[in-house]
Image (cartoon, rainbow, N blue to C red; front, side, top):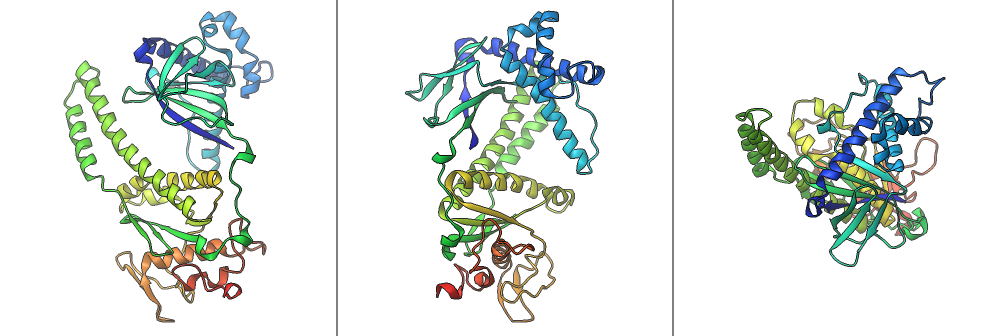
Length: 407
């Protein structure tokens, strides 16, 4: 299994900031030169068109431009691969119907990281809170070693990046053997009380099928500070030293908001995957929701897509099943009888005219989400995270189900 550990780095403490920045700028030039060759050279006569083909041109680069010989060969290959990864991302956006242009030339401000792949790095002195990362061509960089790399994990790549605030971070791409990750319980062994449906919202960030709610973060103070810093930035002369100092203050205000939301999501997703064996959640398409002007800012702050990604990757680490379901109609359908009832957003209670079932709107939706997560698909096979016996009965109880097989 692959995942990433991130640490704060301090190249300034050992006078290596300029060396790291110089190496990153060489990689920026390599990225731009890859773009140039991709757009101008014929793929049939030159080795361009894929990252692995383009790697064969690197020795010629070093002969023509000795500057490229100053950086590690594997890191240079990773930069070429970075261009083609970005190119693939554009192709996917185009296939999804979005209007895209071509990859742009990267100025220094937009290229602030470099990656060492497979070799050219070494983690040392890991016994305390401060460790040392050796990078080829740069030297030893202190890092704040706040958590240990698992002894059975292999560091496949290292990325060092300068944030807009001026802070440096390193990310270790780790490969963990599959036999060391907790295995997921068999679907037939999952108890009903170990399953939960999660409805995502704005006022309540989540509302579970067990009627547990978690409020959305209050970021009003942080946004007030951000607006003040942005007003001060607008008064500065663009490009001046005062403008640059104020730009960093704006970046720090943005960073505080981002970190607060990310920390909140990490804690919430960790709780869900450690508390339950199966989590059903909405598969939201966030883009059209943000295009709707109503509550667009709050929807963006909610960062639902990142929440679901965190939930899925942590589920793999903790041996938990996660299933995403189609959210259409989950607030309209009655969790008791299945009859759909139209209701405006301001109506916060579900009241079914068919069976008389009444409960909180979000609780009703969470139960429907769990029901959909447990039902077999059209092919007749159970979804990867479903409990067959519980599916028809799960809506009847706020905790667990009324599965006849388990009475």
